[in-house]
Each structure stands twice: as C-alpha cells, then as structure tokens.
Length: 264
Ligand code: NAD
Image 1 (cartoon, rainbow, N blue to C red):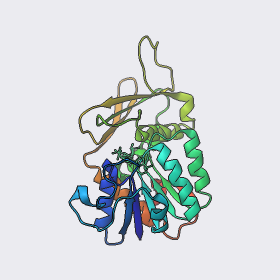
Image 2: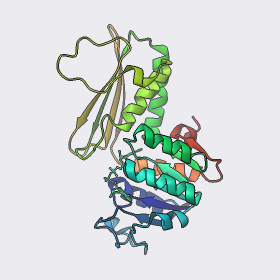
Image 3: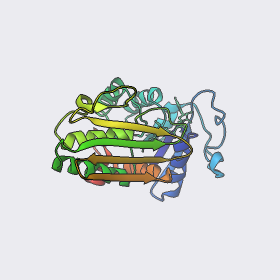
Image 4: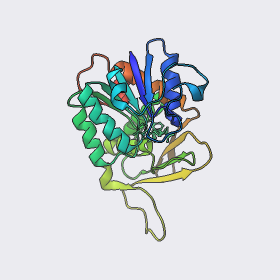
C-alpha cells in the first residue's frame, strides 16, 4: 500500500515516515509540510538520516493523488483541509490529530460518507485496550465511585485535556450510559465547592519529554481502583496508525476507530 504522510516533519510525522519505511507491506509515496517550513525541499527521510529520494512538498493534492491512503497527525485546520482532499481524490484517511472542534469532527463525518476514515485520539494498542477496560469497569461500579482522569504530556503539547483523556472519559461515560459533556469537569480552580456526584473530572500535567501517561481513577469509600497506561515511545502510535491505514484497504466508506481496526 502506498502511504503519504502529511505534516511529515512533525514529531509524529517523522515516526510515521519511519514506520511506513519499516513495514514491508507499505511504501512511502511522499510527505508534505506547511508553507514556510524549513523542511520543504529536503528529502522526506532527512531528519531520520534516511535517503528516500522523495522531497517534502506543500502540494497535498499531488500527495493524495499519488497515495492509496494518507496519515494525518497535524493540527485541526490542516486536518479539515486534508479531509476535503480525501473526498475529492477518493483516498482513505487516517487521522490522529487531536483538539478537533465539533465542527471539525462534523467535517470528518461528512468525509466518511465518501471514503474510509479511521479517527482515534490514540493509536496505541495499549490505550485502546485500556479504554475497553475503563468502559467495562464503569458499567460495574456505580456513581458511588468517583471517576477522575489524570494525564501528563511533554511541554510542547498545545491542547488539554489530551484527546486520549477525553476518549477515556467518553468510554467511562458510555459504561454509565450517560453523555460525557453532561458530567465532565475539565479542570478545577479556586473555591469549587464539593465534588458533584457522577462528575467525571480531568487533570492535565505538562512537562519535559513525557510521551503520554494516562490514569483513570475510580475512587470509592474505602477503596480506589487506578488503571494506568504509559507510552514511552511515539513509535507505538505510528505503528498503530500504519496498521489502521492497511486495514482501510477495500473497506467501505465510514468513520472507524481503533476498536474497529483491532476487532474489539
Ligand atoms: P508537531 O507540531 O510536532 O507536528 C505537526 C506537524 O504538522 C508540523 O510539522 C507542522 O508543520 C505540520 N503541519 C501543520 N499544518 C500543516 C499543513 N497544512 N500541511 C502540512 N503539514 C502541516 O505535533 P505532533 O506532536 O507530531 O502532534 C501532531 C498531532 O498529533 C497533535 O494533534 C497531537 O495531539 C496528535 N497526536 C495524536 C496521537 C494519536 O495516537 N492519535 C499520538 C501523538 C500525537
């Protein structure tokens, strides 16, 4: 499968280039970067010390046309543009970008009417399983168990709570058959009053080079369950995204998640 990487010079972009080159089932069709990026015109593999003979370009349309599937870990504005190109060129799209607004997610839904789209806040197998465990735990423990989600990421991360933390919150809310946005408390500051029953709370820590730590706490009277996942290498997200891209082959249009890819 020919896979193109948009945002190929980003932290995840480079991991994705490396994962596509390493997988015998995939070949790299090229990479794009935003206008003004110092990577434009360089070899797509330069930052990795690899010669691919493919140059980083700004021409996303040409990359879509040359690819079977595109992997996008960029930012919300770029992802919306790429979703439109996926429809126009009929190519599958794998989206790892987080921090999408509701309107942006609506664009992905519309895109998925024409092409397969895999959209996940976290492409690691471990977090996908964690999410399934959280949903199950929330179905068993009623709201006498307070759910709090703590995440920590590197100092460069721009959105909070992390997309993964919100995804875990959604899984917990699903287990309790409620909508997350009715019960979430995304941060606390000052005199907040006592905790409301049934609330799902979030806390975000930022610092250093932390790839991604998530803990979901179910705190009851007399006991506490904590389920934790720690990513120590971004490569786990990249191999998961490549697996998702391969999975889109001959797939009908639709909006899919990592649960679908792993058959969970
Ligand atoms: P980054 O800032 O290092 O990389 C983003 C890259 O996209 C940059 O190189 C930027 O120049 C490029 N870009 C921006 N606009 C573009 C455009 N119009 N065309 C082409 N390239 C463009 O960030 P990162 O740490 O690699 O993370 C990227 C996104 O992926 C974030 O939203 C992050 O939260 C998310 N992420 C998701 C997962 C997951 O498993 N779903 C894992 C890690 C990171």
